[in-house]
Image 1 (cartoon, rainbow, N blue to C red):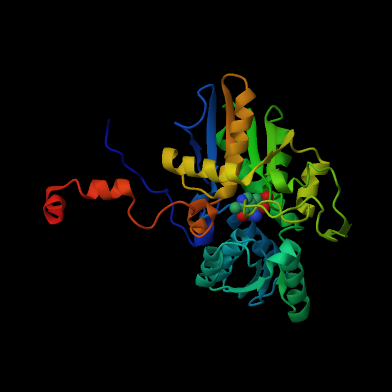
Image 2 (image 1 turned 60 degrees about the horizontal axis):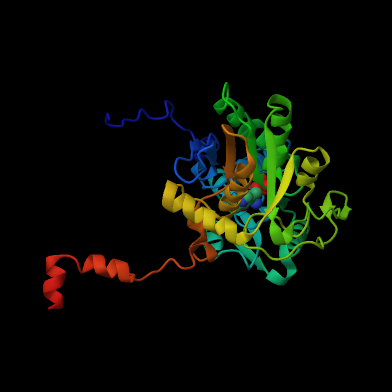
Length: 357
Ligand code: PMP
């Protein structure tokens, strides 16, 4: 084997913002069944380590272009974390103040990360669910004349996935087989944007979407009540679930395009614990460090693989890094102190044996 070398990216970057996107599709070598080839699109390679960097950048730049966002104006948004972290990165780089509203049920790391990136975080009670943080952001924007990012409704969300995520997939799989594209949804931006393109340019690719088993809003068949583009109230099929970043307690307007347009071939419910189990396996057996929704999307892919024809090629979206889940159920059971086994390893050297005598 020759020694590995690298050549740089062949360009200099004028801003961290120019490093958003172009995330790698990586083959899974150990944990997938042998009759399928599975690639993951690892969105943790974005500068603020999630898929939402794309949307954050586009929401700000689209609003700058058409004058909805004024120089120095405060940006406000309701977010379960990754959009806030992405917006905090973009606002820091461009010099906009940012206020994020977030339910107090999401991981502590998320709040601290946003504050570290210079944002203000306003917590809303978990009992008010996603609607609580969403309404608070709207009120703050109206009260203070701030720019509301509206990730759940804005066309700038799916558009950036159409223009970047989907184009990257087409480019990376050019001349290659791609039988299944597997994703989950939070706002639905990834599904709607990638769906638009794959349906046209790779009609042979089946699009598989997943949602939490105990918050299967789309599978329930109950339509979302809306006032204009906004959800009028919480959806009856929603229950608290552990897949942070997936399925708020309403069907977002952005996702509605994918539902109405038939952008997916199957919607598969995934239990939260399956997501956690597969995220752990991706880390410990593939070296691919990702969050709970990534594990849940991979769990969905493994379900599809059970009946997929021999030789099928799948691409699975992994939306973020696992590092922002240290205080969440993902890391439950990961000890801080030495285990029995680790103590035995430590005791196996002569100096440790002497000290013990
Ligand atoms: N996983 C995580 C961890 C997320 O933060 C998000 C976005 N909220 C998603 C998945 C879903 O992405 P999208 O909003 O594009 O549907």
